[in-house]
Image (cartoon, rainbow, N blue to C red; front, top):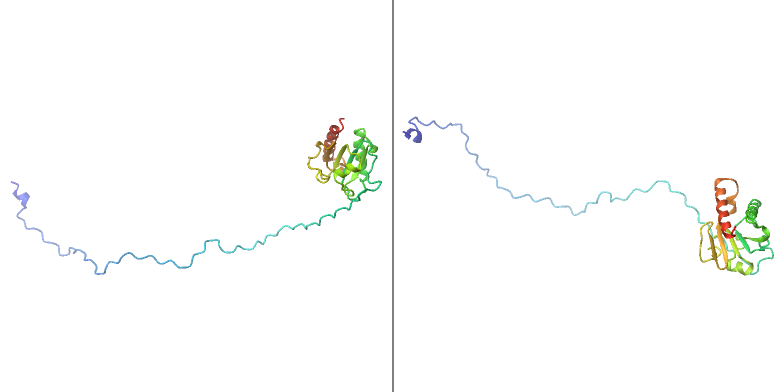
Length: 212
């Protein structure tokens, strides 16, 4: 019963179509191997940005001229008879640095007198030394005059060759002397807030120095 289905029927097989495509023939061209990459050139490529930078054409700030050092003042071994201002009765030495005046301008001297009055002192109690004219080191000052207290206005302790420094308005004892350091009297002239602040800070340090 399965003969016709397994072997096939008696009907003739359909002829092959004449237009059926034949299998593609392999090309006769030989197969080439892998193509070698191109040889790198012997010249090394310069990295980007390796060219010389353009010259800086921006305007440069002016260079401050180098100032020649100030010539040292020839100090006499013995100063002249009148080389400081005041009587120095209490050994209070006030050192200023005034290039324009023998000691101080009139306005600065008036301010100093007012400060002394507040401390119950006067010009006979002190000695004003102008460092611009007599830049003696401190040990030489001690040889030339009595120095119990020293107030330096814009003259640092290093300038008088002391082995330490202090900030403005600090009171410091050293070598049988009490020191304080303050801005110049010229910066305290007038009634500006800055001048008032500097005078008040100086007053506090003088109160401590003289136990007021």
